[in-house]
Length: 165
Length: 316
Image 1: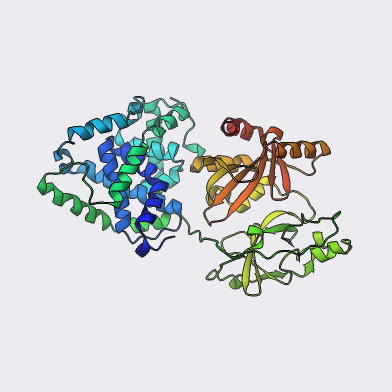
Image 2: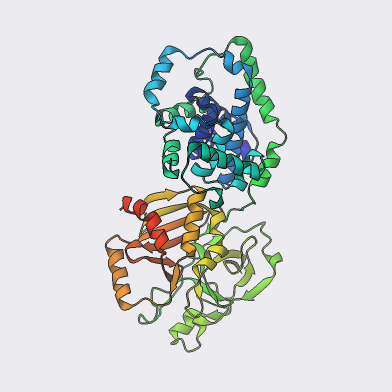
């Protein structure tokens, strides 16, 4: 799709416009924290800048970014340094508080255990099938179906199941 | 909680425009002030982590599995004009660029532009036929030879050789080689003027897999009013379009209402933007439950209208 050796800032900006929202949402679903989600999003695109990966099409590009962001988030959650990080400056905190006013009802979704949040997001919001999610996350399709089923149950979701795909 | 409520909540997750701009600025200008400060010793940990992640050996293999390769179809030479000079009463000015093959009618993509198919090994697919009957010339002579419904007849690139286009069902798209250049023709009808089954068209075009997004535009195709790019929506659209019922012939009243709808901005385009860089345009008149694919007209399913009327109405 692109020649990675010639991937300029302009190219990155175009890819960013296509996928920034998805990458941020994936990161936020996993980290539940605005600052960390921003950092993970930036990191995913910085990795793209450094990578020599060539993409076949936009879907391939999007899948790569989702996997990269998800892996980075998992590492962030695992590592001790995340907890040791110094807090944001107060001014930044205020700025963020003004900018980001999340709907409180989102808390219900974010309160789910981590393993249910990402499959639910990918299935219902991004429209991936259970098979595609299984490939994307390297998890068995049956496990994804179970996670969706349990996630829905926990949310008391009155909707169709993964048979939709 | 309903599915819609869940999706609404997820949509509100962000990022805001300010966040989006800020993150982009930091990506393009990594020297900018960092979002937060790390204790000095931990600053070593972050780059190390990045390098470790980059070296994950299984990642490229994973991406190989995610999508089958879809090469891009790129037009390289503008189409040639077809010289008609036909009696106005017959088809004057309305005869498009099409060919007949195996009982089906195929319309040339991008009004007959040449495509760069170097590396596609088209010739290795074997010859399907040679275009040898000139429909335009026949019509000029009163259509006595009946070329318009004959296989291997064409209005464009007569003498060209037909090949299968690698990666596509020959019943959907064909490659035509003429004087060293390639042209692509896409299924648009039947040579006996019958209507293709909508389900068959959706299946042959593999719309569910090949579509990147669906754009909803005005009839002229100048203004995009709505876009569906979630895979789930594309699948729903494909399934519902496949349910449309062929209308063999429109009544005079339907023609009148159709003309009225077009002149009063009640007719729209649904443009299926495909992953290979091409697109398929369908015309819809929701007020008349009418859909046009290629040369055929169809009645839209009630489910389609119920499901999308709200979104379509919002764009009026």
